[in-house]
Length: 72
Image (tube, rainbow, N blue to C red; front, side, top):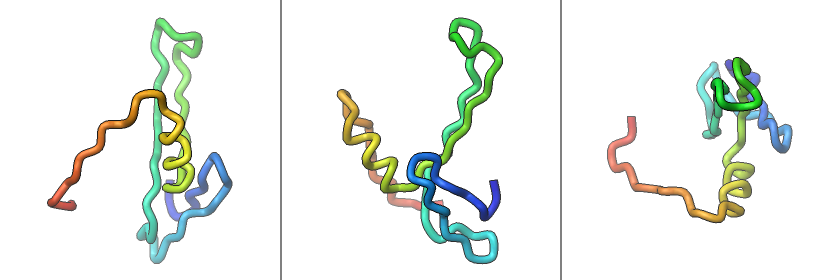
């Protein structure tokens, strides 16, 4: 994806410094299977942290979140 990463929702470009991301983002890749209306298609999109937060606040069932003490 490289240092030209752009949020599909708001259009914001992610900040990179020498190919190292200076902010975090979510990349979703989904290969649709046989029992879907999109069999054989691959979808991919990127969300900045702000757009991710807006999306999950509308979920009927909250996401599961845990605190990770050892960051890789």
